[in-house]
Length: 495
Image (cartoon, rainbow, N blue to C red):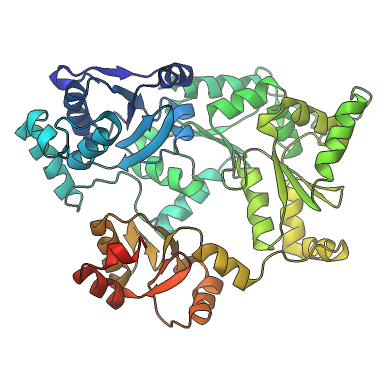
């Protein structure tokens, strides 16, 4: 996409290139865009013009779906999306088509055009012409917002959820890609197709370029912002980077075997015998030091999960499933991200004679992977094993409510989410906080009946929404609006 107006905007082609630029120490503004998004194209014109007004900053453009490693690093799930960095650290973000906010946030990291004055509308008056601004504003109106265009999928309906679930489960191995296996439309999709052919597995595919509802909905459904996406037995394995790494170290083939995926010679069409789990049995290759380290990690907590990613940011669907189960059981657990340490990743397979991840240990004993843990939860066996080994629920409802209330300095318990409120009172409070420029966390009480009922008793406040500041209840919609109208809300939330 060519930059209009002659601004100096550089297209970033790799994470390594971005890291090198960040290492230079100059202020950096990243614009994550997509070729299919009209708001991205028009905001890019504003972005380009601003680059001429702030010559000390580096303006970088990243095509979100073509650079999944970068997009995942900055948790990009919608476009247009901007990240503002200084000294290599992200200071702020902006989602949507809001030229004034973009200019102001650029000025914060790069210095205002006129010292002592805000960047907008001053810089926009000098930079982006009226035609560009009118176009962006018109786009915003068409999308039902005054200045903000959110390209992330709206709250997902039951029909779309059902359709996505059916698609994900339509084949044991399912690839959502750009194009089709015979004619991939991006290099990452091509790589994954090549890998699956080398693994000799049959797979289904879906061309996300042909259906924008699926393309946008699946990002939210699986909490994975880029394509391609690879699924095994209905669970997300990850994108191209994860699949490539798993293929290169032999783990991908083992995962397929562990989940009874038929290995087929694609030339002859004949199925090969599936040997299942436990492919590694000779532990003699482990040094004493490695064995001691692994034993120490397994013993580091009564419940330990070796997984891909972290509990808050799992890097594969199977790891996410076990995290969700442990949280549903209110079990305190330690975790180890095997993607960060290849010695542990490979050594633990030998040590435990278990060839795939995640791996769950309770009191030093290997319980198994995601399928076994899920089956144990459904049958009640997991709860029984935890009780027998003296592992009690680590969190009461009161503990959980305290943790949620204190999870953000300003915390809103509401119906729905800030982007999609489910009642008028929640919507009013969200709009008021945004108008005041207050950053806040939120919890959708419609998603958790235990929290919904518990917080009423905990705070002795019977209705929603409820707004908290530093763990203390401020009140509901009427009180928040009254404080706002009196000019006292912002000071109340910053004492």
